Length: 67
Image (cartoon, helix red, strand yellow):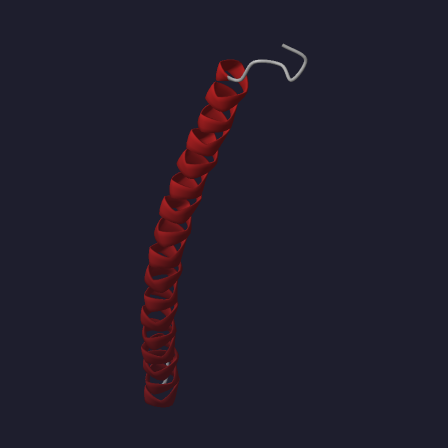
């Protein structure tokens, strides 16, 4: 192989390394976003469950209007 061919391959490898690093940073950022969204969904699920439990308890404690 010629010297020029080696230089071209080294350049391509350098660009690919930069691209892999950039993509890795994007994946890290997206994983953080997913973690936050999952935590938010879990919190909302718990709040809805608590509201449903509270509403159910209020319904059970109330006597029907005809009594």
